[in-house]
Every structure is written in C-alpha cells, then in structure tokens.
Image (cartoon, rainbow, N blue to C red):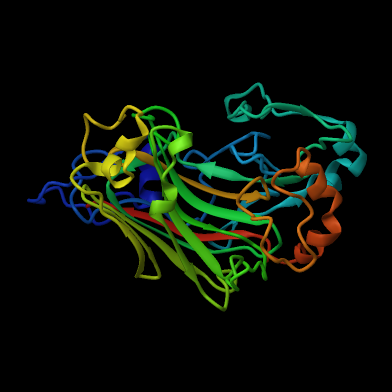
Length: 374
C-alpha cells in the first residue's frame, strides 16, 4: 500500500542512486522518500489528482491561529476538496448550517473520539466555545491542511502553483513551520511564509498602495521570543495590477545552508543571506540582553531544521488587516476591539456582498506542490 502511494505522489521521480555529489537536503515523515537523496531529486509532489488525506492532515480548531482569526478550521469536503486536479479551500457561513441564533447561544465542541477527529490546537479556546451576545461563535468555516506527520524537509527548492481568492477579509497563506521546534516555541524556531495575501479588491494604504488582491508577501519570522520578532527585516512584497486572484501563479522558495530566496513566477522578490553571526547578528539582537538560542548552531539557525508545509484560508483577525487602510464600505471591526469577531459578523453587510459564493472566486485554489532536493 505504501509503495502504491509513493508512486502516485511521484516521490521518486528524478532520483539517481549513483549520484556523486551528496545532497544537503534531509527529509522525514511517513511519506518522505526512503534511501539516498541526490541533488535535483523531486522529493515531494502532489498534483491533486485526488485528496490524499494521509499526506495532508487537517487542523481542527476554533483558536484563530494566534491572531484571533474568525474561522473554524474543520475537515469537511464542503470546505476542502479536490476537483479536476485542483485543491479548493472554500469558506462557508456557519449560520447557513446552524442558523444565526446558534452563533449567539450554541456550543461548538471540536473534540472527537477518533484520531482524525481530535482537536489539534486547544490554545485560545480552540477546542470548545459557547457563543453569547458579546462573543459570537466563529461564523466562518474553512480549512487548514499540513504535512506535519507526512513530510518535512530541510534545505531544498519548493514551488506551489496557486490562484488566490477574492472577497473582503479573506487571508490565504502557503507557509512552513518547524517540525521539532529545535530552539523553543515561536518565533525562536522560525516560520517561513512563502505567500500571504488579502482578498480585498481595493484595500489601499494612505500612500496609495493596494495591499489587497494586487499584493502578495513573503516573510521569515524569527527572534528569541515574541517581543523580538524581527520579521520586518525579512519581509518582501510584490504587486500586480491585475491581481493575484485573476490567474494561477508560481510561489517559490529556495532554501540553502547559506540563504533563503523567495521568488514569484521565477522572478526573485527577496533574498535573505545572514552574516557569519547568523540571524542574531542580522537582527542586532545582542543589544536586547536576551540569551541567544541559536549560538551553538549554524548561521542559518533557526532555519537549519526540518519544516513542514501548511496551506490555509483564514478570515480577518487582529493585526493583518490594518485599521487605517481605505476599503470600500469600511472595515466592520477595529484591531483594538475586545469583540472584533462579533463586530465582523454583525457588519457582514459590508463584506458578504464581496464574496461571490456561487463561483470559485472565494476559493484558494492549488494546482500542485513540488519540492526538490539540493
């Protein structure tokens, strides 16, 4: 059975057991390739001919991903499915399923009895919530899938071909997190954001830049603790007037023992090459007086350990959508509001008309995911 799945994923494509140059790439997981890895080997591929649930584990949580986002991540073929060779992650309204009154008085308990039904993140009231007039239940159902058990790698080239969604306050992302947290919890062990974007068609800053569907961002998060997250030193943006929701694009990462390079459609948008003192020196973190968690490791630390792949569609939350950007119809919540989720839902006359839910416009669509060894 395992052999059949390996063939279907084409994990062995391009491999050569007699390669002379050793590969710097390492892999782990239930669906990682076995045996010798050579530079240039295709070590992971999914063309989404079907939905391989042993490869893509669903997150099941109400927690909001640390940003108090407004979605409920679940495993349901309404919200995540494969059709005609494309993976779709689609938002739906909980009120359409349970009725609006349920948001204000019902209870969601996402704990399950089987391994596939267990709540994956209890933080931020992630496993059980009861709605009330101040804090309604998560009004949007969506999906976040990851290869946490099936595939992680260190150093390589990855490429994801995707079409991004449109609709106010949609937040698609393709990113990576460390499998083992070798240097402690976030952000000490790092985060690699290959692509993030906003679904608003016309979200414009005070200096006239469209930060909605016309912009994508790539970012490294790193620092000894959340107070010293130096991500702005390693954040890159690229704008396209036609919008990244209008067609498929290739989101690419080159990750070596010397540098990390983000590219879009084969064009580099940002390169991070840490100095000999590593990210500690890059961030001038010695001035903080905090101990260096990476001092015994390579200059690429924390990005010298295996990371797994995550694909998700979030909604709203605190911080990613700035309060001072101009959006047609305004923004129904403030990032400082103690009841932001309720404000979002009760202001749906602003955003719901922008969600063309009778088409695929609100869907994050993935054509393929590929990773090569170095």
